[in-house]
Length: 283
Image 1 (tube, rainbow, N blue to C red):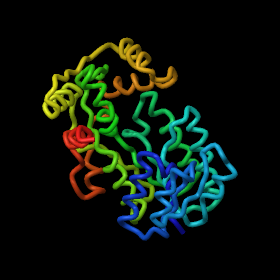
Image 2: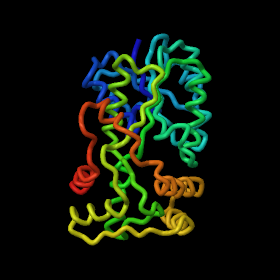
Image 3: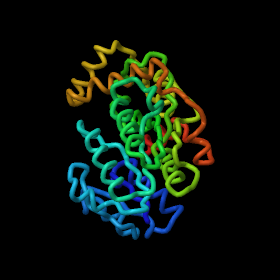
């Protein structure tokens, strides 16, 4: 019986592996990854690596065993819902003990395009009858701080208005996942995970300006203009409307705080966005 982490070399998955290894021996952890070379650093830590792609049903079937606890990290491909359903079906066939899924803040109440696959995946897990835990992750602070070079050159551009964002650092969400995967009492639970303190993009821009010593302002544009900006920046046509839709969700308050589940799980305050900005500026 192992703790199996899918997409283990991704930005979130690699942090989950790291957090797990602080809690359990390496021989209790299995990393599912597409690329052996990319997964080599994980293997060097004593973790078993199973090579499988969400689109490779035969390889994926070998990733799960009876009694495993599985973390299904949501995919990024346009067909990710079908991929998720394949993982769920194969996990059930293998007889896993529990499946945890990285969903979206609000779950069934998250009525924006990016959330549609998450809602459907949650329902597929419920329909499977598998014991489950839903980790409904809010926005990652790194979504913004990874764009700091562009923001310093052109400002922060969006269509979120004065909507508040209760983001947290990616490692905070990884720590919560590790707690759930290694602990008891989390079956049939849905955790709404967000940062302790929310901010507007105007406030984010002001903090970035303060720390960088440069002039940075938030330019709020219409959804149509935002879509044009994203497209001009090279965001693929199928994703640009989804990202613009997230700002609409923010404006409607859908990524604001929904409680303190995250800080309760990790037993510490969540990482302030100011700290994530500071770390990004040092890179």
